[in-house]
Length: 172
Image 1 (cartoon, rainbow, N blue to C red):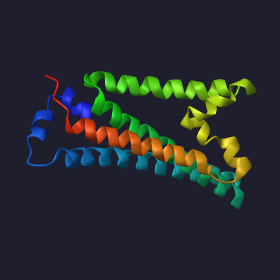
Image 2 (tube, rainbow, N blue to C red; image 1 turned 120 degrees about the horizontal axis):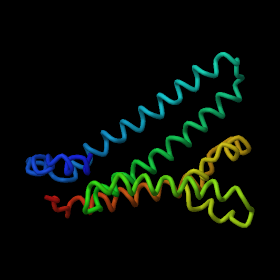
Image 3 (cartoon, rainbow, N blue to C red; image 1 turned 135 degrees about the vertical axis):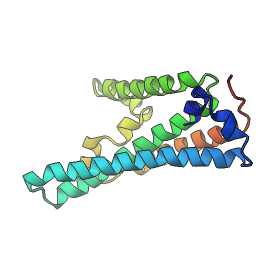
């Protein structure tokens, strides 16, 4: 939403409102967060509906809840990355492209890591491995270390986003 306003040349109107920039960024970030939450809840509902015909047991529902929680944290990570890129990138048109490239690269890293045990160190570089379905099924819980790393990354990205947005000049 930050980048979109600049692309549509409507950011100047928003930034002259008698509101602190942190309030404006918070409103935009919460709107994007709402989209993320709705997407995750919709995915959960569709998964529950689709699974009904197979008469799943209670273990399936626990696993699905873990998967959805993992999906939510991955979504939060990319939500924070999107806000960050929109706030720090000077060219608003490039923010979305960079976000897609980063997401794709992290996904490829998670796939490459599966190819050889020597590449096991790559699991620390991608949130897709933090909430891997096989690990969730095997452990029956979210990994506390990965969850902490995810939350630290989200807080760091949002902190930098707020600082950058407060100093942001409009691109004309």
